[in-house]
Image 1 (cartoon, helix red, strand yellow):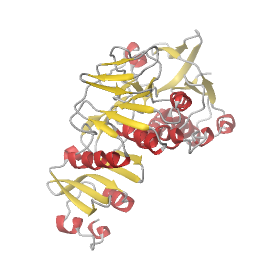
Image 2: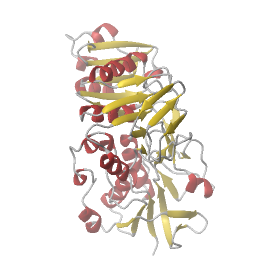
Image 3: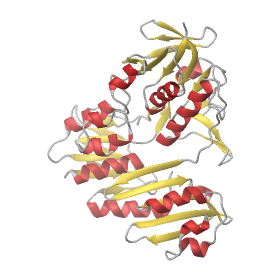
Length: 400
């Protein structure tokens, strides 16, 4: 008897399995994961779990008993080495062959490596999986010199945790400002000043040339600048895991190409999560998103379509980041705007920036302003009155 096979034990893979059972699928259901852990949340890894505020059980998406009760065959610590679309089977690294009726590729992504001299020294880490955080925590001293390479959201979240724990923290960013690839100069400035106020040192326009030390990292070399470090965390982006799909001759370009039903170029194979390049009808363009909400929604859509339902993906991208007492919620992409309206108090870090294009809301950055973020979802794509949008005495609900 053939069934459904899921490759990848991240949020997309786990959610897809749960949705399949919820939608009434009773056939064989096998989920392969290279990790030894049952599926878990990744966002807390750079926040509360790194800080020691969450134990491991709070990371798990569902208890182990869920998979047993739902008859989901969890194959942990198993790598899928091949997909054979013509035979409709997969082959594991140990040689086991499993036949599928439908297949989901939810292989996610991996950290982009920094290929410079000394990058193999002990004490240099990437943060992507649970074991990465466990190793980092085990190597921390009472007061470590920590250098974070990369001023994106993950790097900033790690910096916030580490400086709050009493460590010395330095961020090295190759661009002219932190967060340059993902947000506006105004938002970059907010977080730059926030981290400086907490004691974090930030070097922009600084490219890491190499690492030095006797077996263990001691310095991060940035040309004329040598930064002392006994622990380095690198966060310079991720690469979608598309190798299995490419070797199976599925169409790939900056991710696995899927349609609005999360179906690949093979009608029996679907994909979901960070590894997909998918169409977004709301934004009218294709995207590859590194986002939990996207992974979860694609998991639900793909599950329904694997069962013969006609479900299309049609969701607005949104993201979040927690740093110190700041909660940032982002909707859409600020680059799509041609102007902006600020509502709230920028100095007190309680505000929302609404990005407009021809007076229509196309993105929102909400700092400690969850109500404005939620209303922003309802206002997306609508023309609004700028004066009312920025007026704190005006009820935004009246714009909907």
